[in-house]
Structures are given as structure tokens and as C-alpha cells.
Image (tube, rainbow, N blue to C red; front, side):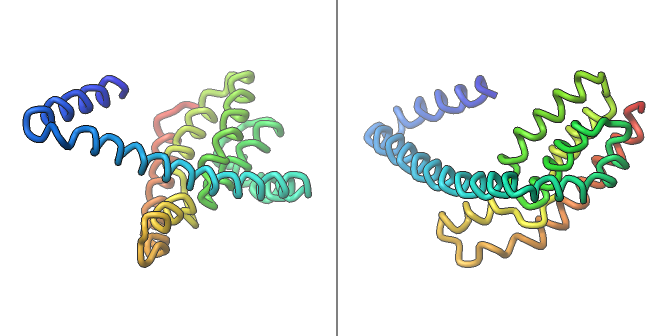
Length: 181
């Protein structure tokens, strides 16, 4: 990916050098400024959600949430031990509520547990479920739309729910068919 982005940058700057050389610096600084504003906004959003998740973890609600998702996780991921099931449940529930960046550390811990047990099926299923990421509330996209001035930031909830539901079901079914337990 880095090579592709580097090529795009080189071609773009080369093209601008010949067509509008006076705009190169202003375009680059404007883009960098927008990127920094967006990164600061996303950092604030993630900080809030990570703080909420930390409070949930300290209050014991994450344990209750993982117990609630325990049976579906065992059914989807197959034979996994309790430690891996806990992190899988937290990963799945964080993804469902739209906190994919918060779910990543839990997915990494679950993958480490699954790797210790050499559970290839569960690792493949984790990849499929995390990549398709069923989301009831796509908080990151809503936040981005709101930051960029969208009039109706929440219009994407239903289409996101439907599309991620279909992709997740397809990912689970394809993994179940093509990966040996």
C-alpha cells in the first residue's frame, strides 16, 4: 500500500508541477491542515469511547457483556477456551456498537490465545467477523460525517446495519464452508 500511495503522491505532484506549480504548496498545506483537524477530532472521539469502555470494564459490565455474548461466540467460533471466548465476545460486541478501534486490542488478545491453542478455524472466523464488522451504530462514521458538516449524520445507520449484517453473515457462512474445524 505504501508503494501505491507513494506513486500517487509522486504522479500528483509531478502533474501539478507542470499544470499549476503555484498551487502545490497551498494544496499540500491545506491537506495537512485538514488531516490534522480530522485526526484531532477522531482522537477526541476515541478518547471518550475508550474512557467509557474503561469505566465499563472497571464496573464489571464488560464481564456481563462477554457472558451475554458467550453462547453465540462459542457457536460461531467453535471450540475455544474461556479466555479466548471472553476476548472474542468483547471484540464482537465492541464492533457491533461501532467501536472498531476499541475492538482491535481485544481481537489481538483473542488471536494470541487462539494462536497458543493452534485454533486455525477460530482465527479464520475472527478475521472474517472483524473484517465484515456487523455494526448497529457506526459511531466513527457518524462522528466523521458530523465533523465534516453533514446535515444528517445519522442517515447511514439503516444502510450500514443492513450492509454489515449481510457481509457478516456471508463471511461467517463462507468461513464455515471453506475452513476446516
